Length: 467
Image 1: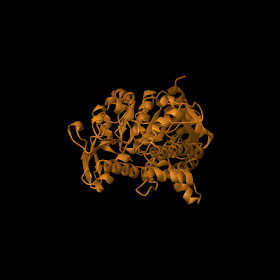
Image 2 (image 1 turned 45 degrees about the horizontal axis):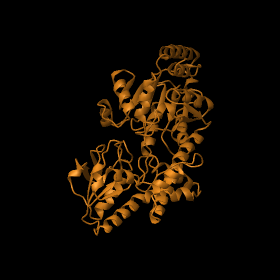
Image 3 (image 1 turned 135 degrees about the horizontal axis):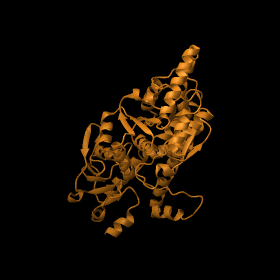
Image 4 (image 1 turned 90 degrees about the vertical axis):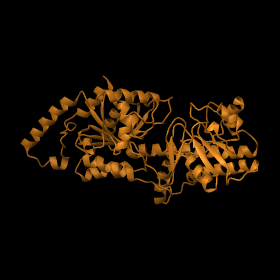
């Protein structure tokens, strides 16, 4: 049986699974209906269920770096998808195919826009006609590293408001343990739904790595925890249409799994950066050390130093765990120190830039500096939490004349000022070029003839070869 037909069977199996899409009533209200009303409603639901078996519908809330690839994968699996995003600009960019995706997802987008499997809308009322709902909105932190639940809370409120009986609702956004229960389960119960009986809720953290072409969604297992076993099974049927699944038995276990994944990465990146500074003191190439250690086939995982971390995962997610632990008066000194080191990393890079200029007999004040690459990782146009932004801002405050070049990021904003990517930077003179991000298509030969600071710590051999 195909994944689509299995999914359809899941949506329509059992007397409680069928529903009236005009806004089915919760259990508490439904019990007050007369017998004749119940029989009529049951007949109507069964008829509608039979009509839907061939074409289940899933609404994806939030069409960003996680939501859009998720929607495309579902549509490719033969599922009707309602893509909901409150940003008219984002929806228009998707329609015009001017979005940051892997080549494979770009092809999927072009294909699905020509078919009728993907509907794009800003109308949240459309959620009510979906069999499944997947919430994919960002969970950032504010300037004080305090979790900002605003986007997620707003999205969950809209989902709960438009929820109908027999829906399966899946939260994918990273947050503190208990978020799914607090923002979805409890509000649904307050509306009169009977969780696990007439509506199903689960948590399945996203595992999308933007620009990574080595791992398709279909290859990466997805963790799933349900409010009940039946919630988990139904969620697994939806997510299983696009990826292997790993069922863990509870919402909280799934939520903690995601926090552990990204905290693990944060701690090891902080260690890699610290080891790089130690190696520098000892006049050793830190990347050569990591590469040599990585030849060990067990007990070691390679993490490399760099200018810092960006995006909405590593710089943000562990703070959701730390925030929750502070409320419980539980210390996590290792994680706390690692996140402090990560937050301080752009400042340390600026210190290194100052030292490099000093070796030339120059001060930062008045120096002409180019930042090569500003996105937080290669191959994407995403500058959220990118260390490049803080590095540029610190250098500007110190009096440097800063420009940047990034073909993936035509413009960016620092405070109230907007910057434009410098075209053909090799035509200009700079006192120092800081390599922050190297995209796969970047040509670096011209850097071998310039004064360059490699904040990626990985270009030594490349620049020597170019020279």
